[in-house]
Amino acid sequence: MRIVQISDTHLSHLGGPTNDNLERLIPFVNDQLRPDLVVHSGDVLIANPDSAADRATARELLSRISAPLRVVPGNHDIGEPGDEPWGGLGATSARVAAFTGAFGPDHWLELGDYAVIGLNSEVLSTGLPEEQAQWDWLESVPVQVGGRPVLVFSHKPFWPAAPAPGENAWSIPGLERYRLLRALASLDVRVFGHGHLHQFSIGRYGDALTVTAPSTGFAGRDVERLAGHGLQQAGVVEYRCEDGDVDVYFRSVPGLAERSPFDTEQFVSTAREVGVTFGA
Image 1 (cartoon, rainbow, N blue to C red):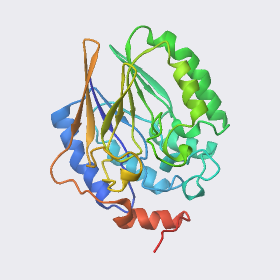
Image 2 (image 1 turned 90 degrees about the vertical axis):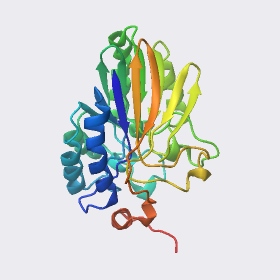
Image 3 (image 1 turned 90 degrees about the horizontal axis):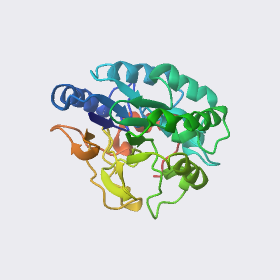
Image 4 (image 1 turned 180 degrees about the vertical axis):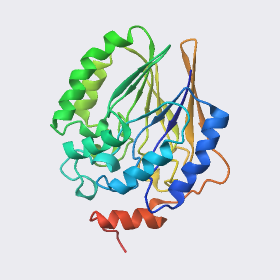
């Protein structure tokens, strides 16, 4: 089984380099990597979770992927938890509904020789009905998975990348992290995959790999303040799953633009529309 993880596409109806990058990557994924499943680990949209135009553009672009596609939401897709969410954009039921209407369920399970679990990290600790629905669903997952090896995908990492400030902004909140790990404890988890940090890196949690997928749209050259040592390059992650093992590869193609979001007109203008201000 081959899985390709794309992340942080940050697509906009205004066009721009993030859209261009995805259009270059899709033929590479379709024709060369030829995965059995593509997982998008969130931040489909450039910055505004309430933009129907951005959702429509993203849906059309992603429809060009040949393999089955599953998506989990990021903070730019539905907002995020915490008292001080980015741009004041907290996760809401209306935003979750808009996301699922465009991209399918916000949490899901794919079963084959391996089990692939998608989680909505942005509703955790919100108290929304969608959070409880996900916890209720998780209770049924171990029985469905059986003894299969498991890959788990979310937008935000399970573990904060020290010395990152603001746990809700950079990782799954601590109490919910421990609750998730208890819910998954009976499973043979081989990979915890996520996005959000705009870099590629691999670590370990027990016998499982922790994999940070890069952004397809941005190369976050400022992430030294968050994690420090990941590969800051646009691309995707390929997982080759065979005989119970999982091998992980960074993949890219020539010609991808690698820009900071703050140097990208579409991101800056959209962020300002939702009330985000940038320093001089």
